[in-house]
Length: 191
Image 1: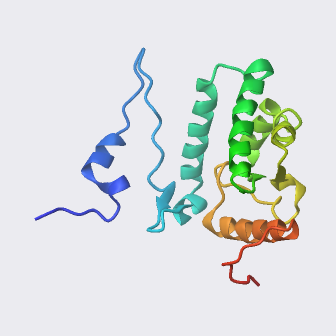
Image 2: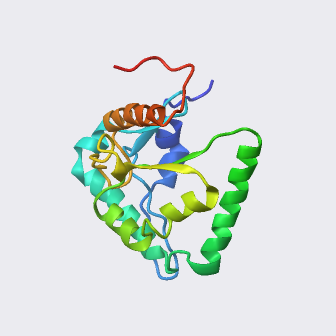
């Protein structure tokens, strides 16, 4: 016989042991585990935020604290100068390879909010990073703040959209792409 878990990632014995809260000790950093109600992966391999996280501010706070711990771990300032130039060169080379094979590229800056967005604006100013990657790669971009239809979302834990908002965002993103001339031959018409 075989023991089967419907949600092996979160509820198998191994997953439960991996998520035991072990306190910090001198010289040992314990990775903060995400709450099991943060998200689920569907059979189509798409991950979505759970309704429980959307409704429960305690879970949202746990995830916000994880984002904050990642911020505190990073002691280096955001890339600039030759380091940033080098990174952009790598991206440009990848973009050029895709274009050489007939591919099209558009960069999409998806929503974030709250302290996460404030930190991004402070650490990664749009002119220095977003506008520069578009210029270096000679690609177009869609920045959520430029389009009223996708600029209003509030992320429950600052970084991801709720499942309901993700659907609305995606529908509006497709409309924006179509306005820019992109086509989706297998797409069913949205209302």
